[in-house]
Amino acid sequence: QTCALPICQVRGQLRVSMPVSVGERLLAPHLPGWRRRHPGLRFEIDLSDRNVPLVQGGFDLAIRLGRQTDSSLRAQLLGRVPVRLVASPSYLAARGHPTRPLELRDHDCLTVAQSAGPVEWAFYHRTSRTRSERLEVVGTVHTTSPMLAGQLATRGVGVLRVVEWVVREELARGALVEVLPDWACHAVADGGVPVYVVFAQGASAEPPLKSRVFVELVKEVLAREVLRGHTTA
Image (cartoon, rainbow, N blue to C red; front, side):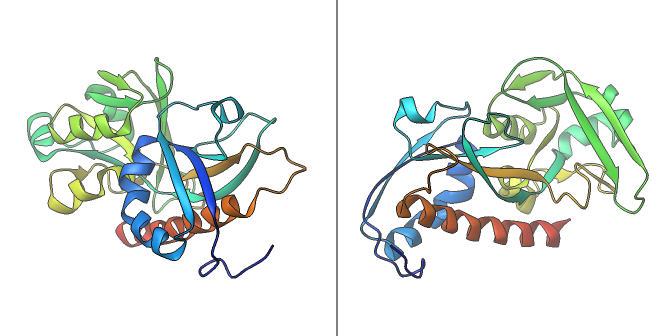
């Protein structure tokens, strides 16, 4: 079965798992438009900041951030999204503005990861291809939720390194500002954190049409995210 994806009348129920920030901040604004384009497609969306088991959970697919290591699942790279280092104006007024990444050792940092413990933050100078700095960060607050970390950063708790879409509204209204603007949180050529779709089907089986349509919709959103990231970098 083939069709032009923007107008195809796909039918059925699609069960999708994704991180909370992806669902609430990235995809939610686009769901009404998707429903108009595909009125026969019903969405069941599970938001979780932990990787849920696809087959056991009855999911058709999942959206996941970062490098995927489970070779038993079929994974497809959808795109990459920019990452920002941010803090509130009140925090910076009280603690000062770092001038290079290694000075973050003297600051309160908020860390986001699936498991507790130190995390590595790497930085790349925007105008020098050879200049980079890395440091191990132990968060004054560690959480699995980027949304919670963004709220804490807005309230002046510390410096946060996070995917841009989580804090875009706060940056736009000045509740957060970018820290170390001369440094990028990822190599410029990389473009940011990879975003994957992971299918319940094995590598040898083609995902059903409803899954492929959803993937194309997400790709459209990510393509716009990349353009917006470039304009704000």
